[in-house]
Amino acid sequence: MNEVIQRVATERAVAPCMACRGSDGQVYAAAEMMFGLNERFHYFECGLCGCLQLLDPPSDLARFYPQEYYSFSQGEPLPDASRRRSQRERLSSWRNESQLMRTGSFGRIAARIRPRPDIERLRPLFAPTPIRSFNARILDVGCGDGTLLADLWRVGFRELVGIDPFLAKDLSDTPSLRILAAHLAALRDERFDLIMFHHSLEHMSDHRGILALVAEMLRPNGICLIRMPVASSEPWSRYREHWVELDAPRHRALHTTASLDLMLKDVGLERFYTEFDSTGFAYWGSELYLRGVSLVDPGGKRIRDPNSLFCTSELEGFERQAKRANEIACGGRAAFYIREAR
Image (cartoon, rainbow, N blue to C red; front, side, top):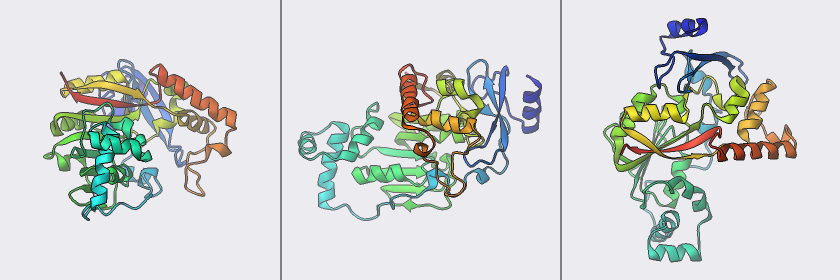
C-alpha cells in the first residue's frame, strides 16, 4: 500500500477493499460539496475490482445529514393507513393491480377504459420482478420520509415496511404501512418478496453483512433491488474526485458490477438484471464541483436549479451524454436486480 493508504487504514483500522480484499490501487481526496463544507475525505479505488471505499469516515456522521437533506424533505403527507379502504378504493385496486402487473381480465379492461397515469411511473420498478399481486411484502431500506411507500400504498399494496436509522422517530406503524426509525437488523426475523435499496446501500458500511442479511430475509423467489451510483462509470472516469455522486463522506462505498458480483456470490445471491439509469445530473452536478460550487444553495437550502447555471444547449448535452453512457453500460448509476443464486 502507498503511504496515504497505510496512514489512513492504520488510523481508522479499515481494510482497503471490502469486496476483493485487494490493497493495490489509488487514493483520491474528495471534498464535501453538497453543502459546501469543503472537508476532505479519502477514497480508495481498488485496482483489482474497481470498488471505491471511504477510508476515513467521520465519527460524527449525523452532522452530514442535516434536516434539509433531500431524503427527509417531507412532501405530501403520509396517507392514513390505519383506516379501512373504501369499496371504491378496493375496486380501484383491482384496476391498478392489472395495470401495474398486467394481470386479471376485469382489471385489464378497467385499466384500458380509465388508466391511472401515476402507475406508469411505477411499472418499470416491478417489470423485472415476479411480483404479480398487491399482497407482496415490500421493504424499503433507507426510505427517508416514506414517499415511495406512500405511493405504493395509494395504488393498493397492503404490506409495506420502510426503515431509516436517520429518522427522528417512527412515521407510521400500521399493518399495511410501517415507516420505522430502525436498522435492517431490527427486522431480521421478517421475510419479504421485495427488498429495495434506493440509493441507500452506499451510505452503509458492512455491505457483505447487509447482503447476507438480505439473503436470509428474502422469501422464496424474492428479489432485492439495489439502486446506486456505479464506480468505474463514465462520469467517474471523467470527473474523479469531483464526481457529484461520489458524495463524500455520505457514500461509504460504491461498486462496479464486478465488485458487487463478488460480494453477492459470497452470500449465495446473483445479479440477474441491470438497468443503467444515469441522468444529466451526473454531469451538471460534477461541473459545479469542478468550479467549487456547492450543490445546495446555502441561502435557500435547496438543490440549485441547473437552468439558472447552465444554458439550454449545455443541459441538453449533459442529458445526451448520460443517455449514451447508459446505452453502453457505463452510466453513473444503475438498478441491480438480485435473486438467490441458481
